[in-house]
Image (cartoon, rainbow, N blue to C red; front, side, top):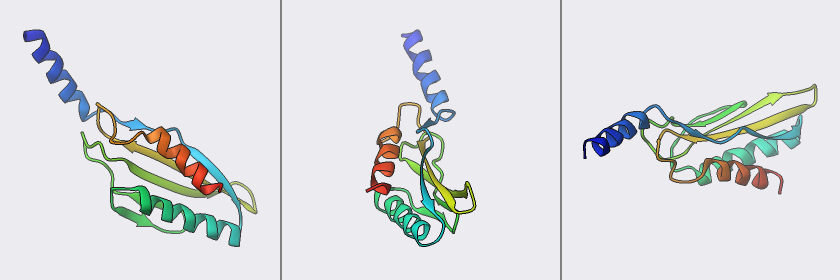
Length: 119
């Protein structure tokens, strides 16, 4: 019984230190109208899939509120950066802060983002 209590205490303690995160995924767009459309599409995707409120939207970053230690709801960060004079990369990372995992799979959400953006 003492071991079980120790294991449970350790899991609870570590839950605040753990983050389940997707790999960064990216799509590219051409400067101008192509990127304007893609950036709007990225914003709509985050808005439609996130249970967390959007914290910031500007020309280069879309972020939801950051999860507090132990929260299982997925947070999102989308960034846009120039990779050449006429090409931009739009990247997404999805994560939560729960040792037992997220409400949904961050890897699957990242793959869904790429699929949505390339349709």
